[in-house]
Image (spheres, rainbow, N blue to C red):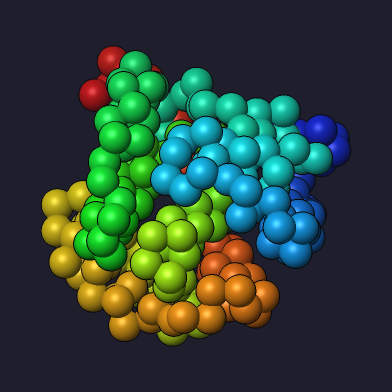
Length: 201
């Protein structure tokens, strides 16, 4: 199933290629323009602005909260009926230490507020919090993708693993374009989302 898009693309593989190219270009713009530095770290509003910036040329839903229930494999993200409340609770979470920031990131991943493009947007959002709160960001070239995906699946129950992986990858190169773009490159794998009805909970 190909997501409805502004470009009229009906082939999912082609859409994935175009989406990758366009969102990478927009991510670079976001970084080089200084726009990111003017956003408030750690809020849903900021995450939505990042998402809109990256995907507005592709999807009508850019920057808008999803209205379908999403699952990936056996993992179900926050149901739509609880999504608003979940985002409000996440916004209230503290973010003054590395541990608190990662815990907030894990909860935002569980919320998964957008229909598509959550990974790219939320990684930029995470690095913005780390940059503003502790003067560090993650060098995603030091995060092995398969390990990351596995520990992120387990993170709502056991976040010690993701904290360990991220701590090993912290860098003080907070204004380095290549370090920033590695977080975008890290995102490109088949999302494999399925939609489920609330009654299936």
